[in-house]
Amino acid sequence: MRRNRTPLTALLLAATSLVALSACSSNSKSIASTTSGATTPATTTAGTAATAKTTVPATTNAPATTRGDTTIAATTPQTVADTVAETSPATNETATTISRQQLETALHTLLLTPQEVGPNFVLDTFTTPPGSTPCGINVDGQVPSIALTGTQIVHPNPDLAMIEEIRGYGSTAEAKNAYDLATTGFSCGKTDTLTLGNPTDVSGDLKVPSIAVTVSGGDVDGVIVIALVTDAIVVFQFQSVTGAPQSPDAPNPIDVSAAGLAKIQKFIDG
Image (cartoon, rainbow, N blue to C red; front, side, top):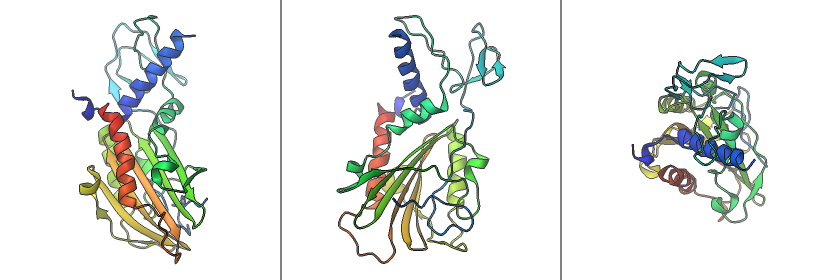
């Protein structure tokens, strides 16, 4: 299989397992609320702890593995995130468990940095958003992610912000399902507190299935871009204060989203 077709999460799991094997051998503003009654534009799906569902055949003679309180027989299909049983040629040691935290740490390296967003942007505190979209669809409740990471980057004067989230899923089919739900979750036009523009297909600009939606509410205007990349969803959120003069430092949502997706694709392509 050509590597550029390999799912992102699978590649990250493999990379994380190599790190584990190496360790063995050596001994500002946030429009994050999507619940009903929110007064600011919202992000999409929220991350909750979940079990990976990317299955690989188990080696019939391999020992059983343990996930939490459950022992998984080696003769049954196992998941990549449950067990990565790759053996180091140098040490003959095996990395057994890839945790959600390890996967999220690896995923975090693919996020944009302040310098990649624009001049005078600085790192802020990212807060994991809740699970409902503005139109009442709890995407992660229906299709749990196996990893979620994000970053919040702000510009202090004038007030600007960019939030990026990456969610990994157990398979490309699950990611596609989550993407479709998220798209629907931003397509209702208006809620009690938010006004949503019509979703615009920007797949041609971003080279992957993707939409852009304008969002306004309270004193904040924003644009949200949702993109599907193999077995992951990437969300970019751009915001500014309603009525504020246009800043030359304000990032172009499509250009920055394209840069973020290119950073992820570079990793996938190797």
